[in-house]
Length: 231
Image 1: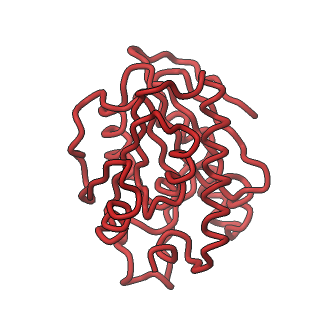
Image 2: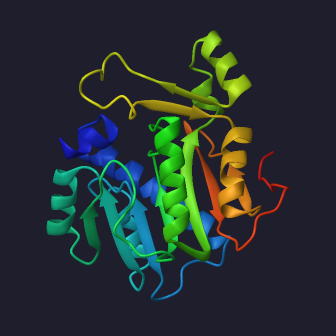
Image 3: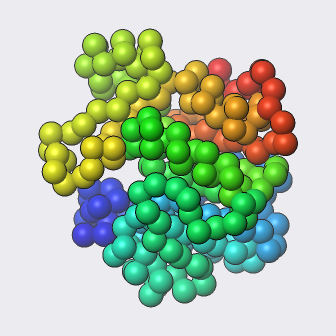
C-alpha cells in the first residue's frame, strides 16, 4: 500500500525500476553541476517510502541523506529499512524542522505535480530557505506529453495562465483538495523560481516521460534573464 500511495501501482518490480530511473536522472543532472562531494547533505522532499533515495544512497555513500514526507507510515518504513539516512514527518505547511541553509541538494519528484498554487508558493519559499547558497534544487513538473492529454479547454487555460490544478473525482475525499494533479507551463515555473533562486535555472525535457525537470541554483542575488535548456 505504501507503493500504491506513491505510484498507484503495487508491482514491486515496476516501483523499483521507476525509482532507479529517477535516481539516474538526478545523477545526470548533478554531474552537470560538478556532482556530489563527500559529506554533502541531500534532502528528498516528499520521499515516500524511499523509492528514489535508496538508489542514490548506493551512488553517493559518503553523502548525508535526509528525507521528509507528510505520510507517517512511509516515514516509519524508511526509519526501519533505510537506517543510514535521517527522516521526519512534516506538516502540510511550512516550516520544516531544518535550519536555514542546511542542504547542498534538494530534490522533489512528483511533489509539485500535485500541489495547488498557494501550497506550491509556500513550499518553494521554504525550500529556498533551507537550501545552501549555491545549493541545487531539482523539481519535476508535468511536461508537454502530459499536457497533451488534457481536454482542449484546459490546454488553453494552461497556455494562457501557465498553471492548472485539477481535482480528481476518483480521489475526492481520499486526498485533500490542495493535493490532486497540477500542470505548469515552462514559462510559468521558470518565472516562479527566478525571484527565489536567481537566474541559474534550467528546464530539462525528459524524453518519453510525463514529467520534466527544473534545476535551480540558489544564488545570493537575482537577475532578470533566465537561461534554459531545450528552449
